[in-house]
Amino acid sequence: MRSIAAATALTLAAATCLAIASPAHAETFPITDSFDDPSRWTSEEIPGSTSTDVASFPGARSAPNMAYLDSYPIGPYEARIFRAITLNNGASLPRSCTASIWATYAQQVDLGNVNVNLKVHSGGPTGQIISVIGAQHLREGWIQRNFAPIPWPANSRTITVEIAAYHGVAMLDDFSINCR
Image 1 (cartoon, rainbow, N blue to C red):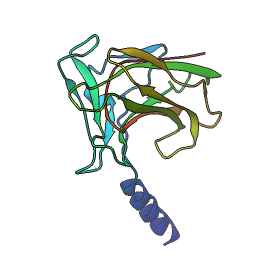
Image 2 (image 1 turned 90 degrees about the vertical axis):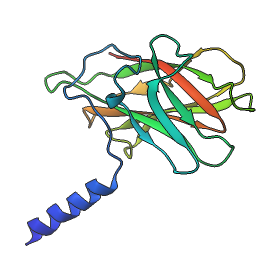
Image 3 (image 1 turned 180 degrees about the vertical axis):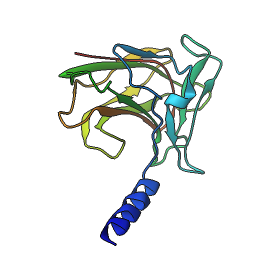
Image 4 (image 1 turned 90 degrees about the horizontal axis):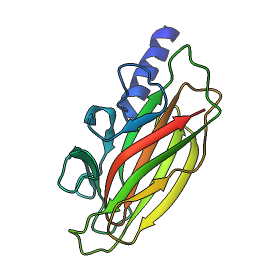
């Protein structure tokens, strides 16, 4: 009876968590992602307050696809996207990683900037934050933003990258990560 109750509790807990898209297979480093495969990214929106999309948009930096995170008008809400990265089972855990994303703000809104947070979680999106840095984009044009140094967690084969926009509309392209 206890095992049934425990299984039910785990199922309910899993159903209430944000499901994160992850590749069908483990990946090898370095990884470069131009948002060409939207299924690798999961969006989190607040209906009526934020919206996100990974699709083909005019103005993409390199490929036709990019991420579009809209948290305008100004409010306390973030538009967020996530990407899980899982190591091969036989691969040794890396010590640290570096990552970057190209970002700009959408000029279509009457706000001259957007704030972007770059985070990395141990495990899934509710896991411990192991890297975080914020950046404000004040001018037009694509700017490469680097994540804070990412120490690979000793107790996980997966990390989850989170990119959040608030106080504006961000356009993102060409994510890359390398671990050693």
